[in-house]
Image (cartoon, rainbow, N blue to C red):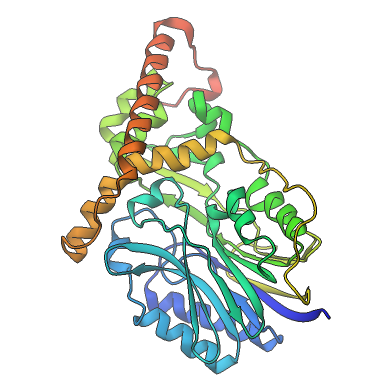
Length: 391
């Protein structure tokens, strides 16, 4: 027979803040959610640090016996709830973005992000194992953010879980601006080339893609998101800006000042509880810290999909940029920063990196060739694409 479960999802402003401050805010939200009767509560990705591309991330990584995990266990026991959220976790040799599900009795399950998004690869590595937490509430599958945009990962969980918890903090990079040192800005779609093709104003991920996969799997999905405004410099700034400006020769003069350019984006309001039919039961509808809760129904046994898996609506080019280009641009930065913080025994070279570097070099060559072609007169920027330079 089916079971009822009250689940809550927490949204937090993603701006970086000291650990004690962020844990204090999270504790208040957990207490409020638990007071509504919630049994399973999901926190956002990197809830204890906030989300930014900055070398301070290396020092924020914690061990499993560190401050945040101890705090999670304490809160789970105090409120008699199951808690899930992700942190930067320092393992034996590498740093991972790990989603941890903690039971009231202190049992802990760990899932490492499988698909770091683009520049995230500058601060942690990926793993390749799914995690099904066999809790007293049921079998809970775990994912982190960009993982949920990959159909293969949903297929690996299908038929094995009673519910999914997806903890996220995705800035809307496809519609982001680059902010220059003089505070002028340009939207990524106006960079031309691949950036125009991947731009979207539609909330496919983490919007319709999650809703459709909840219905396909026949299980409820809890999804959390960060909030506010994401503003960050980029790791490997010269290489990153070269990739951005490949099809815009008129912007190449900014590359020497790449370290002063910021990426700025908002977050979609996608902190929500989705039922097993793919319907959104409740969602957080305002920017900032908050939560929502809803009762979901769990099947007696993990449902097995009977229909064809729905396709992901995200552009294939977005995967190429996020995975291949990110690996090539960010991996050396990760090894250098992790070893500087934690010593030369961490961050061994991953052989797959050489493959991605080769792919990125090919992409760069194509982009530069296209840029030179455009510079010969085939490209004239529109008024909307021309920056205010004072010239």
